[in-house]
Length: 589
Image (cartoon, rainbow, N blue to C red; front, side):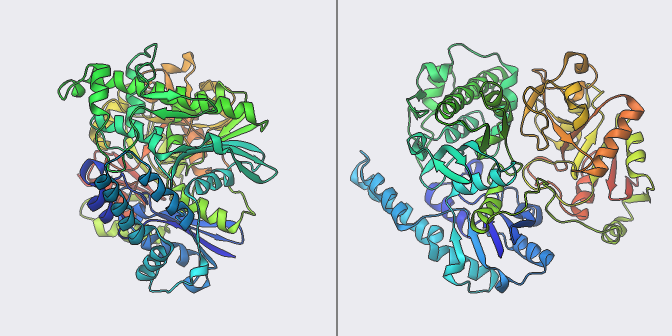
């Protein structure tokens, strides 16, 4: 069976802009962002790529036509050979009726109810209905897909299916939490003997979405919601925890029985700034004060602690209701890697799994898994485009006036020697990794022994905020020596954070956050042979067991995908060298 899972709408951004004002800073507050395609053949995930890597539009929500063409071409499949097209949103009549009744039951004035109904009707007719999804697919591909070939998958079940595919497949409890799905923002339950059970009384509606509240605080602090929440997480380390937490004390979030919770101000789909006045009152803020770094850090700390308290409340209920030995965490909130570690360590679960596609890139994979089943569980994130030496050299020859290059006989050894100095290297090889993290195939690498290497990369290369930390990569066999892993044995996808052992803080200062932790990626020879060899050779030369690894891009742009993307990024930043496959590239000047 051939299954294509995909996410994205042709008119999604247009409709959300017109109906809900999702423009400017709020432009990512829409459905269908992180558009992507995944292709499975007989239960094996063959290829997957995010549309942003190909169309170069960060977090694009457009129909993923370039990704679809690429995946079909790589698999040698014609579009009419596809048995199922799996889409990670599902709005059947029962769901639509429930949503309409919920609007009608609100205490809004009649005119406001009609306005909400009109906007939802336009959205449903324009992109969400089965007919609209089929029409969009036909318009962009030129193929009139039979209606029975289109499978709409509930959004949270697509998240769950992705996480389950990349875990060990055993019995597990699960917590799926994000901004919104069709009607919910969080579900919880268990997988037992392959059967999924959702604990309905733990479900949280969209109106009380914790992730949307975190996004609202992200916006309040001057960042972009549904995009910059990780900045708030990083910024929170610059302030101390307040007891009691101001957001809990003032019941911005109220904990309820059965692992549930409620927000003081229910989320408005129109995206009103309802929380600004409340947050100003709680923290003593104003438009000017909100820009002060110490104030931002204090609010960020409270927001981070709030997420940890609320999700721990959910996990405690899961512990009470299931004997499953492990925990799956997926959805946009699962990118909060600081929280992931605490949820595991403070629970009775033996392990927790968060996939490299935990946020919305993963729902294309999850929809395909849900619709087509799984026979092969390969945890590799390297699923996207790859390029031959000839293709790389062809691109380089188009830049002969700006770059020079040599062919390396020993890629790992020669790169390791360069990294012994205070140098920044663009590292490009193999297949593009999938998801929001650079996992060693499209990365910027540096030596973490230099305390100021973070400032150099932030200022001269990434052009981003100076408080942002960088993650270290480490051989899995060395990880426990450098980091306090707790229950974890590995962290291959940068989805967990660990304290750096005291004796190594001064060894890798460029990869240690202000709170003494690091978001690590563990590397094995089986998972990424060349990267593992580079780490080994670098350690032999320096005695330093880690390298700084950050995504190969600048702020606001997608991670590079093609050799041309890599060369352009190299030339427009102060990256010192570019390792492009087997070519060592330098600037002419």
